[in-house]
Each structure stands twice: as structure tokens, then as C-alpha cells.
Length: 103
Image (tube, rainbow, N blue to C red; front, side):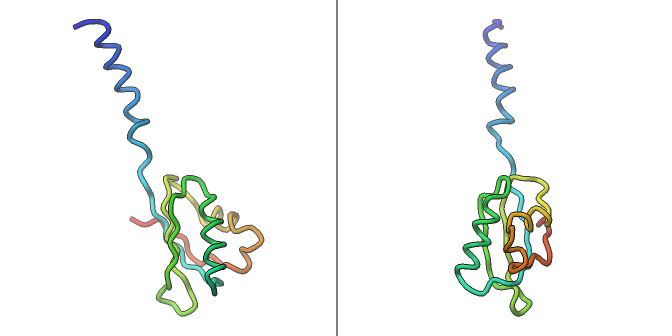
């Protein structure tokens, strides 16, 4: 086998992790304070600014007055504290009660 073949094989092996990309991770939060479409838009915009977030879905939760927020990201360790910080001054209005990594 030629040297050029080995070099191209080595280059291909080194680029495989970059081509694979990061695996999506899902977090599920229970929140209160969202009472209208504008509220949901505000929370969606705030969470979309978090590292690696590609999708935010908001739906009614089982508990009356609460919403289930599902966040899809490539960040392996987003915390509740980061989510609250992303809300900024609105964190007193839109309260994150729980934040769990979905299995």
C-alpha cells in the first residue's frame, strides 16, 4: 500500500468525529407563569439562546396552570440555573420548577 493511501485513511479517521456531530439531548421542565402566546414566545426565545438548543416545545402540563417545556440541545449538561439565567429579569414571572434530563 502506498503512503498516499495511508495519509488519506488517517485524514478520514480524524474527520469522522466532526462529521458525526453531537447527539441531541432532551431536557423537560415544568414551569408556571406562561398565560398567553406572547409568554410562550418569550420563553422559547430565551431558551433558544442556550448552548446548542435547536428546539423548544411548550405544552400544558398535568398540573393545572403549569406548562411542560421540552428543550432539545446538543449540550450534554444544561442546568436549571442556566435556564433561569436565560430568562433574565423574566425569571420572576416564568418560574422553572423542575428541569430534568430526559432518558
